[in-house]
Length: 364
Image (cartoon, rainbow, N blue to C red; front, top):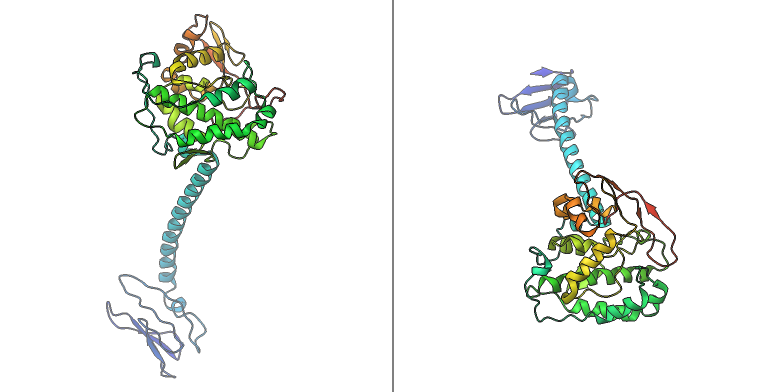
């Protein structure tokens, strides 16, 4: 028994039974397992100290502060240490999850990781398209897209967006037709590739038209992360179409076929890609880009588009010289030094000023 003033005493009821506090003068008492009147009580087991600090009416100091200062301090530190660890772990987890959801919303991390294909079919090119299996009987009409491209896109790839706006209703009709003709597993790889490449380019043009006038596609909010594409009952973004479908089809030349509406991008071909001509069109697009101002090819020094830096693994597993050399007239040293050019994100229109960004963007 411990007496901590003339009126109060605390009695140990025995191992495992807890404690009792009583007031000799007023007759008020209470088990620390329960609470009576104006006395706050709590079990303090020898094996596991449960703490509760309450004040009585006549005793204006904490019972436990008077009786067990060292015990309280030690137990409080243990509890606080455990609590702080839990708070830190929980806080860190919430911070990581919050950052992930923000970045996925803003930049489409799942799409960039190739995890957002929405279950759409994407066959893999085995070997080369020239040796691909025969084309199936499926027919997707891309003639309307070809008519628009021939009218508003020059041989240099520059786009007359002001003119395009005058016939945006026809572009809408083409996109609606594509959305209703959902790709099937039965389609040949050429048919799937032609469909997805045309879909990407047409939606990119449409995105610019819906925000025109604009100096750069990067001035548009989340251009590659918004779900602006409809295929059947599925919605996906330009980033998902590129990273989760097209890049998974094992055809590196698609990087020179899809257009991001920017000056440093491969030029927009002024005709639609078709299954019958796809291999020939991809060769033309790749060769044209390799020998354009976007690249500087020398025997011992290469100045390349940043596309080769951003997507290096897509080109012969990173063996850039091995991929590039067949498209040039230069015998490149396997140990040639490589530098990457700045990327001009200004709009690929006929009268747009340069907007150079040195940083990696979503599409990259």
